[in-house]
Image (cartoon, rainbow, N blue to C red; front, side, top):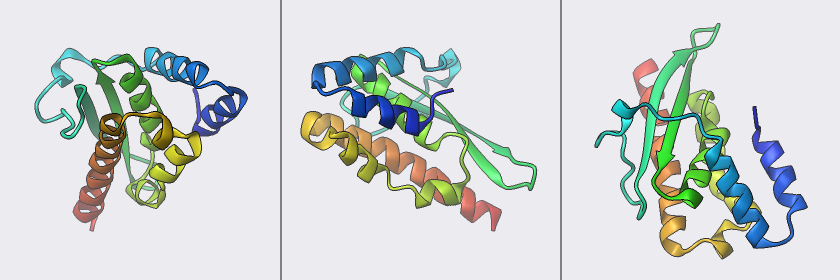
Length: 143
């Protein structure tokens, strides 16, 4: 399974943005398929120019702490790759871990702010905010 550190390492090896885009697209191709029934209005992420779906389920770890598990998809190749990066960063983590993660700093580190269109950057922020909201809700319901 690919970790966010694997992605960071691979990005650092790729100097050209064409190669980085191809890598992001490859990450998207490796996404676990989203079941047909999960392509719903409730799972659609608002604020993305491309269509993006994030499906969430909550599991509990051995200590009974909630962990948010995600599947996702997009109708655009590059965005599907961005979904893969977002899910690598957040899926399987506790709400507290999710809220403590600065995804936007990571995306800046990868250079996305300078190399994605403003619409794609907004979509990326919308995905992150959706997951952060899910984490806040999971924390509130656990209290």
